[in-house]
Image (cartoon, rainbow, N blue to C red; front, top):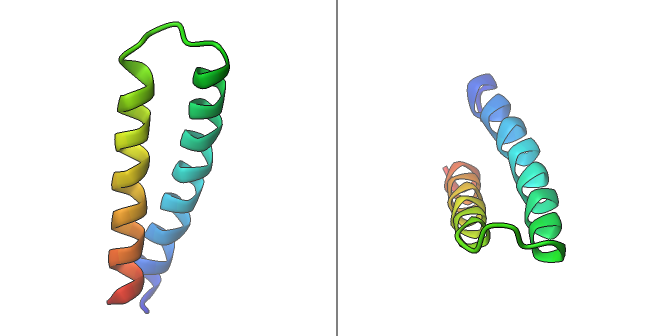
Amino acid sequence: MDKKTKKRLDVLQQKITKLQRLLAAEKEQPDDPAESPRLEAELAKAHAEMSSLKSD
């Protein structure tokens, strides 16, 4: 795994952590009904990219 891939994995891990916190807060206090599905989709996309990078 090269340096660029490791950096991308690190950035994705930080993004996933942030999205999980935002999603938890959104589920506690749903202000916008469209926000929760958007966050879930973004989180799934980040997980997919991370697993794709790990498999290479």
